[in-house]
Length: 272
Image 1 (tube, rainbow, N blue to C red):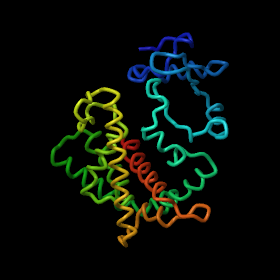
Image 2: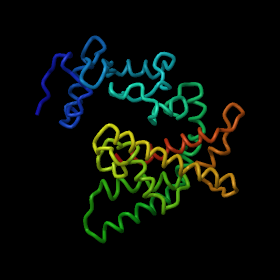
Image 3: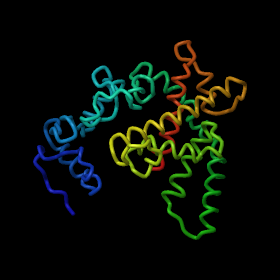
């Protein structure tokens, strides 16, 4: 089905059904053809916002953090949730790597880059092959599989957990906490709601997201305690513990935000 050419005033990129129908690429093309920036009109859930769809404009936004700051938030909140201060995003402002501006963003990014250089990644090749073979052997016995759940979900989770020093018996926990954090609005993950909170509601989504977030930070807080007690390991957590920025060690809070970001980005983002 061909996406019709729309009046720019009718294009609403906050409508998720556009992406479900696979119409977004054509709409992006139409927006790029406009001689001006497109402003998404106000609607039931969102205030007006700008759609930046041209390469030159995206480049300009990316290179001018003094105008387009990441420290004020990186996700568009529905009108009814604006101003909330108990969300993961609000608490991460200026503390988590993807919610920092230069120059501190650049300095902290260099720390984790040490673990992702070609030389550092090459060391992991035997581990990746071993885990992949293990997954494929398990599938071969059955003769069929759901690739998304049995390969796409398991492989990146296993790799990032190993890089972060998470033992295999805790991988399922990381998987569950990641899903709760990023899929908080999905009823499938709203399985630990307090009495009186209705599944599918905004309160259910907020509660589920907080459960995932607090569970992950609590887990890595214990890891930090163990490392400081002498249980040293050759992983990303140790790199962060040994690192300095501007002559100062990272605080526990900064390390915890790093751990949270690396697990989430290395698991959910990669598998999807």
